[in-house]
Length: 432
Image (tube, rainbow, N blue to C red; front, side):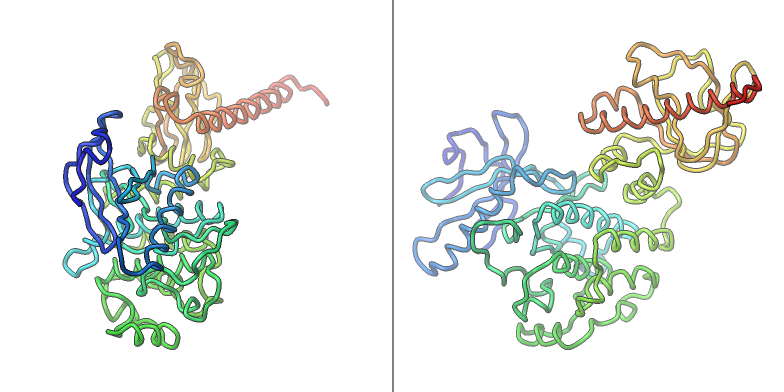
């Protein structure tokens, strides 16, 4: 049957088919209720054929519906609704216009190295989030990573997911053969290292345009995975830094004991590799910013999701020594957090404070919704970097992020009061 608007009571206007497989397809549609584009994933029911395959397709659809309200992450595709008709099951998902990463896995169409690291970093963070909720994806591959604007990526298709706390029987041997870890062929229970392996293989393909093994049959590929090492990346491409090759090869190592134990360890090695890859000076990727923020004391206690949201509303700036950042008696609309270097605070030309990396200023522009007049001048004391966040942008952020910033500002104010008391006692010569 042909999918059309009548299948959904004319709520959705079917615009075009985005992709098709053996058991269904994905369509671009316009949601007339919510006035936005969405992707509709159709899982058709077969009228005859393999009952076991039908059952597995149904279970995969149920998997995604069960997880729809559980996996809420900026790098995971949001499933908004699920339903069934007499002929098919379906999912209503957010739409990303850039296609999938599959288009960037052929020689001549590869992404820059730093862009690949940025993508891997985001995928690792999203899977770490899912794994902590007891969910393993089990089908990570370029076709299941969607691409949006401004370097956005999102993981899709949790139909093959393995849930640690599930009350129903789950199939162990699922996934795409090229990305499946060797231990699954020994019928071992999947773990987070299964997903790490798949990300490693995907990284290899995105970086080289080839898969890590050369077998041209299913049986040959399984044998190579179980008994042989992958083709070294430097045989496929010569400009990949050793640190990046190390991270990828370790992630997809056939020995589970050698493979990364945590997503954080994998991310840390990717962060080490990023500065070593050739890239334009103006390149400005979110993963590098995320890694900077999570190391600053101001952001202690922020969750990964809150840090990613902070990255999204931040403007990154560099200042030279003596350059004025904010000036007293002028209205301010932004708050700042120093990421490197130091700044000097003066009032009417008198130095009253010095701030270093990890400290913030201008927070009253967020706490006081009225026009806030700066009470002091802040000048770069050295070559420094910082983030600027408009107070209004933070006020429009999620409630969780606003609460986290408010707690951080409270810590800052308590610290300032304590230091002010210490200076007063020192000047007054009190003994305590």
